[in-house]
Length: 241
Ligand SMILES: O[C@H]1NC=Nc2ccccc21
Image (cartoon, rainbow, N blue to C red):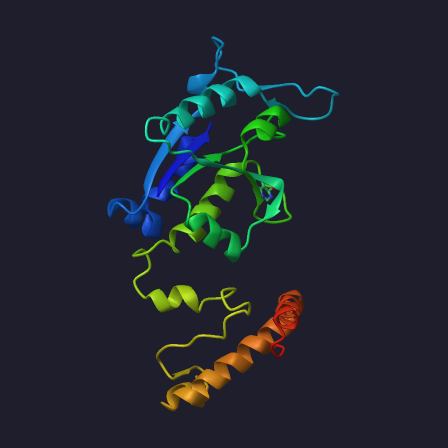
């Protein structure tokens, strides 16, 4: 997978050199290219923002640098007919979910546009954005952190990135439930003991315990996920969660 990221703060993306994504890059599974938006700004001050029409607080990112940047990046694929899927992380986007990550993991070339200020001129979004994605209902200062979140979730789904393929399929949200609690040695820590069933060696009982804990946790913390499960079950006629 090729990923291009356009930002006015390239250093903000340096975590992509570390850990899971860093290893995927070192192994050639992911090919990341960072671009400083300012290199395309057409004025001597390299300005990327301006006052919003209609007034209001803050500044808006100008169309010209984005248009030039995305035109040049898209042209990289012209020779061999490749076209990127252009993603704009934004608070007004579609919610990012595990299913959305799985969708993006199948795309050979992603381009992330990191907005700052009050956002990017709407004409850029209208013309160029294939996806507008929100990572949650809270306010960040820009799209860089959201791009890191989206890229980590997508990268771990790429073949060969996560050693134990099972840990990708049975983690939270993949089966629609929150994961059960996890434990490791020692068996007793202070006055707290690991649930005996997990040390019983009875894998059927362990599976039942984990499922019950996942359902209990999900009902307690994310009843919305259970409702989604029940609706999905109703749609395909099978039993509830
Ligand atoms: O405000 C944030 N909420 C959710 N997603 C975002 C993506 C880019 C910029 C800002 C946000």
